[in-house]
Length: 386
Image (cartoon, rainbow, N blue to C red; front, side, top):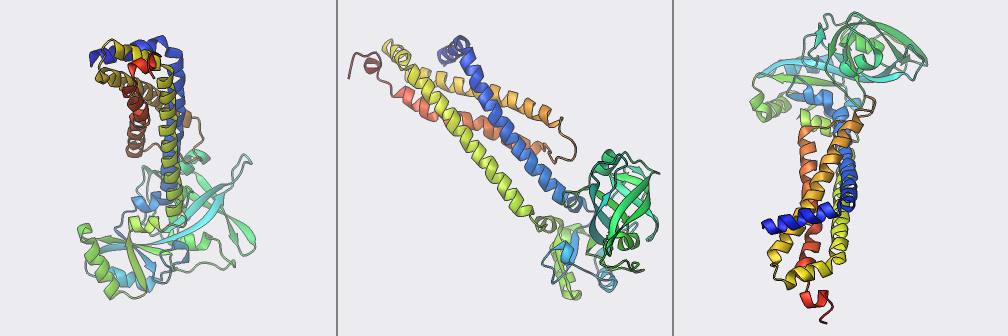
């Protein structure tokens, strides 16, 4: 075994330029795979972040909305009916709409998700700076970290929102009372306002004022015992008419385009790995063909197949390991140069899965060359046989 390791290192050192060049090819494949994985995580997170972090176990939709938030409308009577069911701790209305923030420097406005919540109820995010919302109709807002980063707003600052009312664009000024962590929805950063204020600001076909107790899109349902999720869902379905209840994961998986988007990116990652197997396999196959006489000489002087196999496998592992290490560092370093508007997230679990997959494709891709090495006949390789 140690003879095989020695042979592998000697050959790598003598041909270090060639092996380093191929390690760089593996590094480029690594960058591609990691970036596709990070982009998939970023896009997925941008669609599900708020719903995934929601401080409620169930989300109630209008039963005819087919789990589409934009199509769902739930009135205050239904909210009270859900709250009255035994086992429900609290409920909170949630309203969603898209508006933008005009930028003072004249650059493109920042598109945001305007989310209406009931102060102190499920749906209002915890703040990391400042305080929470106080009144249902106050002109105040909680902004998420991305909005704070891109606008420079801090607690106590004035946030200006532009929304279409009828055929005209209207500007609304809100005081920032708190900053929360990243809570994107619909691939846009979020601003949270009291539900009545949301109904006043949200884009409408006419410039009519909002209602004192407006209808919302969905309802966040907080349970007394979160472990009784299925039981409570069945109980609510039986006792409350006109609603469909699902857990948070089902809710964000039914966000328009989420499943198709993730399937597309996963397919791209799979094809990138398959390309890596073919490229690595092709390189080592050519490498083996070029050194058939050397392999024949080793066999002619009595070198066992196990030593030759160990030498080939060590070379494959070393080249792959170096390439993956360089590619991983390059991918993380390159991601730091992108602006926060580009949704790239290196999540530890998916990143580790990608790195392990990349480390495995080296030996898998090189199996054919190892097999070919073992089948080399010494006399034929040396030109002494047929």
